[in-house]
Image (cartoon, rainbow, N blue to C red):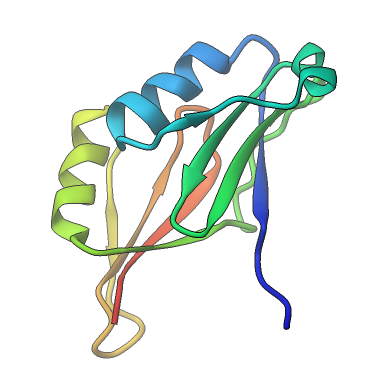
Length: 118
């Protein structure tokens, strides 16, 4: 069996406070302590249901505009409202019939997808 342990999204150097505000404050995800040897690299880890999201510092940061994680959520309207409250705009997509989803960006311009759980 193969399962997803974590996914990493790049953030710019010094972006930890903005990342924490968006992912922890805005979306309500819990921060995870990084292993001691990795703390010097900066960044932030947060818990997802059954996996983790690593926000890793990239000194030559460029936002991911096409590649993106897809997050399955229990209440997509609540998440859309939280995204809006964080200053980002949900872009609803109806391409997949009978599947509610939207795209948004994190504070750094990385593309994100949120899908209502089946």
